[in-house]
Length: 119
Image (cartoon, rainbow, N blue to C red):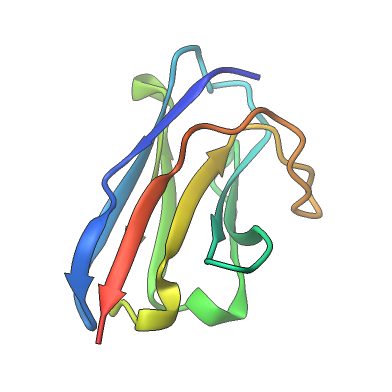
């Protein structure tokens, strides 16, 4: 478990793109599974995507084909490329570097980064 800093959020029109970054203060090389989550106003935090140490990825149906999760172990950073954004993607996005293979997060949370998609 390492402290995290999310960045890259902002205001974008529907159909636009954003790239989120999750920078860890320590090495992520040996971390077996990491993920991105989001929390929309009035809703519970939900899983968006996960990536294993070997690069195997998984996505919730709502973002499949639009979002891409990746990790750069040399830079201790995980990314979320978000394309074809929709208003329903509006949320605070969080990363977590301790995620079970079923998607349950058990590591510390960063401050999150706000993503707002206008219609």
